Structures are given as structure tokens and as C-alpha cells.
Amino acid sequence: MRWQGGRRGGNIEDRRGMGGAGIAGGGIGIGALVLAAIGYFVFGIDPQTTQQITSQLGGVGSAEQGVQGSPEDQAGDFVNVIGSNVDDVWKTKLQGYQPPTVVLYEQGTSTGCGFGQAAMGPFYCPADQQVYLDLSFWQQLETQLGGSGADFARAYVIAHEYGHHVQTLTGASQQVREAQQRASGQAEANRYSVALELQADCYAGVWAANAAAVSGGEVAVSAADLEAGMQTAAAIGDDTMQRRQGGQVQPDGFTHGSSAQRVEWLQRGYQSGDPAACDTFAAL
Image 1: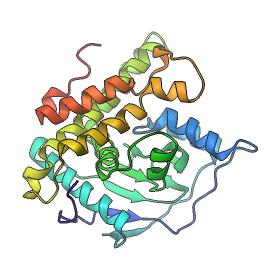
Image 2: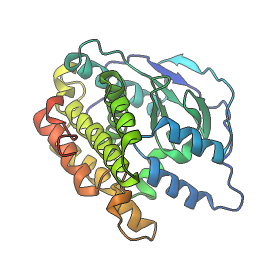
Image 3: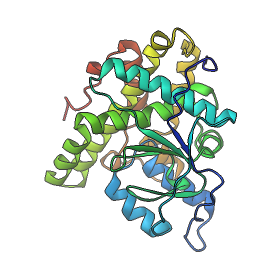
Image 4: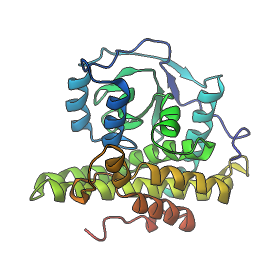
């Protein structure tokens, strides 16, 4: 994936090196805890659920303020370039689009949705309109979850979280929460969650399709890059995660979609390049 020549927007708040609370949990093994938490939360999180789980894992964090601007290390630079490019795409697709801030942290940090921890995986908080990334997740994605280590696989994660920001701006996230409150049971509520997550996957594909056009080719995704993204999408499908955790596949418990669904909607966004093609709610 080409990205080094892309625009740096500097919309990063870097809290790395500020400490962060350790994960509570008594005798639970850290690997098991990380895997279980990511199984529920990777690539998107409901703020009410965030507050509930974070209180169980580590309590409430105090206010923090990191360094604003453009990180100089390669990992931070990558997030800066990809996030800036995603912003540039959405400025052409959504009238009145306002970029989120990306917070880089280690282990744990305070958020508008409660105390965030690395075990949750990357997440977006609509309360403060910020994306939260502990970059150790890249290694977990590859070594524990079976995702790709390619640059585009990581960019897909970032673009998915930006997709949740778009859903907040369009009102889709609020509509889903209201529909879940009216749902007849958990299985129905989960279907709305799946639709929201698959739309964010589709939006990631929309970004990838338009990345080169808005950057003069400085950020560009090839067919091989897309394959790496699809490998990652398949690795974190609900059915795959349930099998990895030793259980049976239970579709009523899906919150993010099956591996096949996640691959399908990422492809659909990429092939169309149009957010209008991302209506995952039509079948509900």
C-alpha cells in the first residue's frame, strides 16, 4: 500500500508514554482476557456497553491531555496519514463533515464513554467524537486473531472506526440505539448492531476506493492490498471469533457480522466507492 507521501493532518492526540491503568481481572490470563474482549468489541463499541465493561475491568480514569499534532514515529505517522486521507474522502462524500480526533494511548485512557482499555481493541466514542487506538493491537490482530500484518489491514481498522464517526454525524448510530431500545429481545437488538458494524466495513471500502483520487495517488490501495483487508475482515467475523473461543456458532449472538458478511460489505464499498451502496439496514 502506498501512503508515505500522503497528507499529514495533525489531528492526533498522542497519550503514549503517559502510563495508563493496568487491566483488572484477578487471576484471568491476559491473553484470554484480550481475546475475549476483542471478540466482543473489535472495530466498534457502544458507549453504554463501554462504560459497563470498563468499570468491570479497571474503573474510571481521570482526565488526560496528550500531545496534539503529528507524531514523528512511523506507527504514529501511519495513523496520521491514513486518518487524514479518510477525512479527505469523507469531505467529498458527506456535506458538513467534521473530522474526529484520533487518540493514541497505551494500556488504558479516559474517554467520553468511560475508561478505555487496550483489551477492547480500537473503538470510537460518539460522546467525544474521538477514535481510540492502542497500537499494540496491530500485533494482536496478526498473532492472536489471524489477521494480516499488511499496511492496508491496519488502515482498514482505522477507516472502520472513522465509519462509526460518519454514522454519528448522519444520525445512524442514534437511530440504531433507539431501535435497540424498542427491540423485542437481545437477538433483534443484535441485528441492528450487526447492520451498523457492516456499514462501517462498507464505509472502509468506500474510503479505499477513493483514497488515490483525493491524494493525487499519494495514498493508494491495490487489489493485493484489498486481499489483506479481506483476510482481516474474515479473521474477526463473529462466527470465527466464537469458534476461536471454543464455542458453537450462535448467529443470534452476532454483534458485528459473520466473516463472510464482513468480507462482502468491505468489497461492496470498495467496488462501488459510493456510501449509498452501504445500506446494510435494508434487510431489517
